[in-house]
Image 1: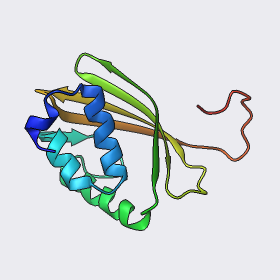
Image 2: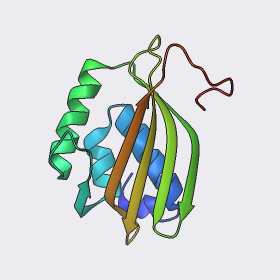
Image 3: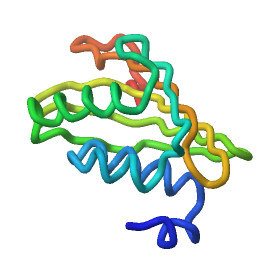
Length: 130
């Protein structure tokens, strides 16, 4: 999908597509289609540049080819998008709840935050984690 094909979709759709493609292993192409040259992120486990995050994502995709990414909800306000999702590395994995926060400039992702919480085996809350 080239830039001309991404112009007609919302920032929320771009953010969700970016995450779905990254989860499926289409990492470099997703970065190419959706991120700006000045992209940076705030994941504390990797350097803040795009290349470092892409390498970590590629390594994870190689280790977990059956990853399951399920969006639970997404919200868009101005130049920011929030995506709340359930990520499992393999089908039997309880996985994690992940919230991604995107900041856009000129229709491209320029900044990304992510916060995760493992899904507990023994849940006390009767409402569930989602």
